[in-house]
Amino acid sequence: MERMESGMGGKESGMNRKKGYLIIQAILCVLLVFLLSQAAVRIFREGSKAVAENPLAYIYTPEAVAREFARLAPVLFVSIGMGLAGMILGIRDERAGKGVRDGETERNLIKARLFAPGSEVLKERSRQRKFKGAGWAAFGICMLPVLIYMTDQTHFPETDPEGMILSLAAGVFPWILAGIACLMAAGILEEQSLRREIAAAKGKLSEQKKLAVQQDSAAQKELAGNPPDGELHHSLAASAEGDVSAASKSVYATPAWKRYLPPVLIIVAALCILAGIMNGSMQDVLVKAAAICTECVGLG
Image 1 (cartoon, helix red, strand yellow):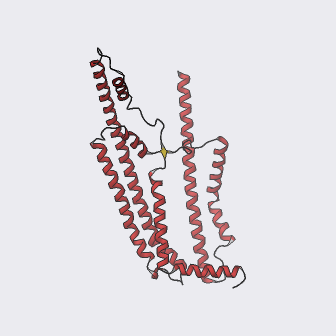
Image 2: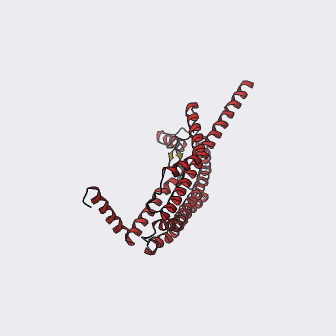
Image 3: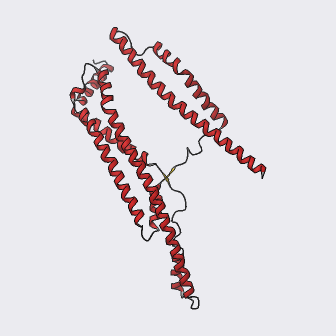
C-alpha cells in the first residue's frame, strides 16, 4: 500500500514538473514573439529617421539587426535550450495530438434517443441561437467603421506611405480585433449553453430509461402467467434495448472558435478587396506590377 501511494505521489510530482515545463516554454515563446515584433518596429522607425536625414541611407542595416539581436538573444537561447531539453527528455503535451470533443454531435446523438426534448433542452437551444445571432450582429457593426475607412481615398496619400500604414493600423485593426473578440465571446457562451443542454438531455434520457424499465417490468409481471407470442416478445425486447447508444466512441472535431475564424478571415479579406477596388488601389497595383515585370525582362 505504501509503495502504491509513493508511486502515485511520484507520478503526480512528475506530471506537475512536466506541466510547469510546458507553461514556462509557452511563456518564453510568447515573450520571444513580442520581442521580435518590437525589434522590427524599432528598426523600421530608426531607419526611417535616418532616411529622412539622408535619403541615401538604408532602413535595414546589419548594425541595427545585430543590435536588436543582442537584446533578445538571451530569451532566444533559453527557449532553444529548453526545447532541446524537452526533446531529449521526451517531454511533450499528451493532448496535442488529440481532438476536441464535438458538443454538437454529442448533443445530436443524445437527442436522437429522446422521445421528447424537454423544456430545459429547448430553452438552451434558443439561447444558443440568440448568442450566435448577437455575435454576428456585433461583428457586422464592428466592420462598418472598417468599410467606411477603407473606402475613403483621403486616408491613402501617396506622399507618406509610412504614415498611411500607421493610420491604417490605428483605424482598422482595433475594429477587426473587436469584431473577432465579439465572435469569440459569443462562441464561448454558445459552447457553455451547449454543455448545459447536453446535461439536461442526459438527465431527460436517464428519466426515460427508468420509465422504460418500469414499463417493461410491469409488462413482464402482467404476462408472467401467459407467455407472449413471438411478435410481442420481439417488441418487448426492442423496447428494452432501444436506449443503446448509436455511437459508443467519443466524437472529436474542431472547437467553436476555430469554426468561426475562417469565415471571419474570408469576410475581412473580401471587405479589403472591395475597398481596394473602390479607392483605386487595384489600378495602382496593376501599374506597379506591369512596371516591375517590364524592368525584370529588360524592357523598362
